[in-house]
Image 1 (cartoon, rainbow, N blue to C red):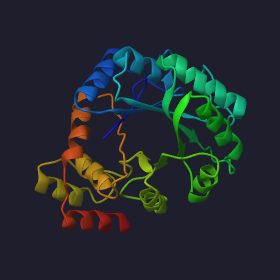
Image 2: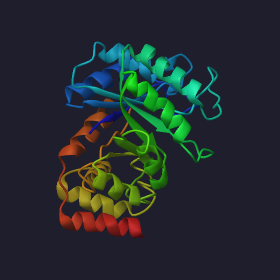
Image 3: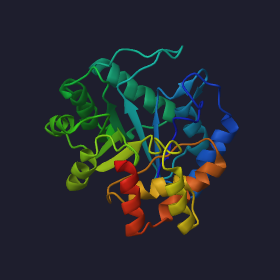
Length: 267
């Protein structure tokens, strides 16, 4: 069970600004609870608050076993406007920005986040592979991709993680879960609770009640049960929600629970 830092600067791209003291406390508590994988990006910011700066304030100097993953590809102006897809030079600059902001001499894991207008990843991924050869990046990942993008990237350099939108209600791009499991690649769902509370809330609550858990915990545990390579990064700025999310890592659902979750998604 990891932690996603996207919502620490603000609950949404348009604000309002989050509480930096609470964000620092949440990050430190996450590590205390055993979280050793934090997901961030230089474009996770709102005005003067950035996820990278909050992580550095809270956790630097970093524990040896703490993995910090970041994403490059999208870019935002200081005013928060989204920019065109990054080319090799912009990707290199983004990696160096993450290094500066996090206070590191290398990045543990860097995802290339594909934007919808980009089909071939060879030029972008090749630029990151070159930085990996230089020692600035340890491992490479992909985000928002289809199987053909993964196959293309693997011709250039090893891919250790895929981060795609996925949840148990709608299961977009479900084939990628199995592909990653077969290849022993981490599959990292973002927005893992999509659809929760919109439909079938009663059935989710029934499963939760049987385990003395919450529907959110059932959804997270259900994702973990899909494959041994699933890695979750639910994000929150709430200490209470953090505790709830991390506790979901110890929830073991029964076969009938998983079948019921599967029937909910089919409906």
